[in-house]
Amino acid sequence: MKKYDFIVVGSGCAGIGFFLQILKETKNILLIEKERICGKIFQARNITNLLGFESIDGESLCKKVLSQLNGYEEKIVLQKVLDIEGKGDSVIVRTGKKEYFTDYCIVSTGTSERKLKKYKDLDLKTEHKKIVGKKICIIGGGEISFDKGLSLVETGKNVYLFSIGNFLKVNGELFREGKKKFKSILPFTKILNIKRKNKDSFIISFSRDGKIYEEEFDDILLSIGSIREIPIIRKKNNRIILCGSVKGKMYKQCSIAFADGVKLAMKILQKRRMNGNRSY
Picture 1 (cartoon, helix red, strand yellow):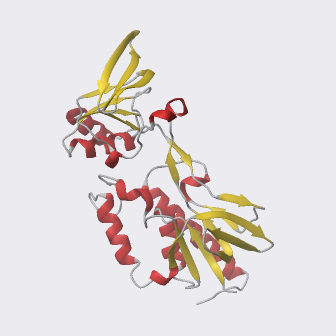
Picture 2 (tube, one colour):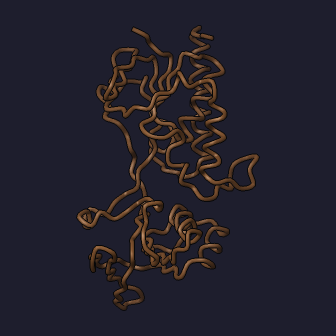
Picture 3 (cartoon, helix red, strand yellow):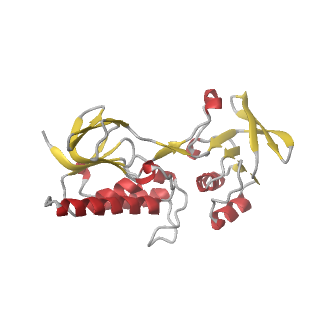
């Protein structure tokens, strides 16, 4: 049975960074992605911290990545990884269709949007492309909230942004654009209750400055942070390595994630060379 030198699980910026760097040393590698190459970066409206790009949207960046991966299609499979198991100096990666064996498994599955368990029956959305109606409330105060909100404004939505905090983590340029284009930005706002008025609208009760308010919205977008999205790992060994935002600190910057993938690949390759294990 075929055994790979490396299997990368997840094709966000960290996974792609590792994949492209490791290809310089070995072609015996496999990239497994459950849905779309580049992951959630596809949804980004405006990326401004990549060397060589003054500004680029996520969809255009993904097209450039796919072009860079041209010729390596046989090394990429679209399957959902169910679990990963360490076994001695090897790793078994299981999907719903097959078992794969490798010397190293790089887990770069990224994060998923956090949801409000209290309102799980309301099925509140976390993807801005699924939002309907005209008057939209975004709950959250990070850069992703602003990015999604500005994407909605460009499709003709009226956006209201509620945050429990003060937007200190949002870069100034993005904040100023949101302040100019959103209908309202409310910091230090606590959500008291969310309920459906009917199938086409919601009622949100919230408190601010010691007062309680109630307002109706056509739809609600949650952007309250992220949780790590890691497959089940059985018998973890030192050949199963986390990369990118799944390691702990969840930086939602593709430049940081990409660099993390490249750095990890360089570190592992150096170790393999020192052990006399070099393949082409």
